[in-house]
Length: 235
Image 1 (cartoon, one colour):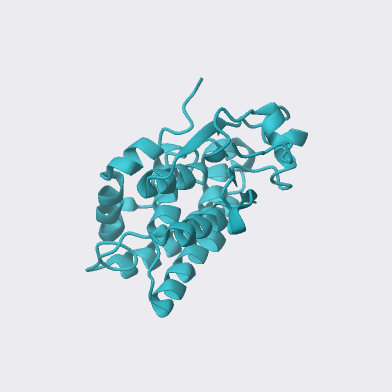
Image 2 (cartoon, rainbow, N blue to C red):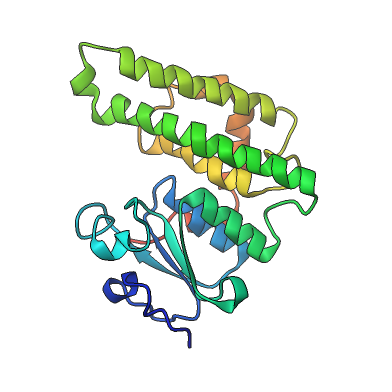
């Protein structure tokens, strides 16, 4: 049995089975990336629901695994050289899981790097911009009622990113063509989330990006996605 005692997080959220991947997350656009990937890859894992706030993501135990205090994070008891490894940042975790299994990322080096470009496009663009859009569109709308600039800035930038994605997906099943990869897994939860969590479908003119909408439906129809979107479940 794997020894995870060197990870303080396991004291607050004990592993029932320390021999499988431990997932610390919430079903947010970032969090579900990893649960979806784990489901797609068929890897055994144990999900721990980490709430926002001082008893969850800001607790010393969680911060010991992710100093930034953000979900998701994982511990893989069978990391490089067979030793346990703790990882944070959803994009890094997706790359790790894809490389660990040899799935969801092309074997061809050029296609692999192109996939990573689109992963970084989400991490540096879609995620931050959609997150800021959602903040001002829904959660801080009252604070900017007399100054539309913040909401308009992030709305327009989000729409610009959607136009790039729409052009990429024209005549393509997935971001990399016929193959579903971590580039899709890292991106579509944010497209879904801007609607589901922020109510931004109309503000972002989703109807004006038909290739993105068709791709989103293809992604959401996958059984592993439907399961992963609900993990970790509420207690």
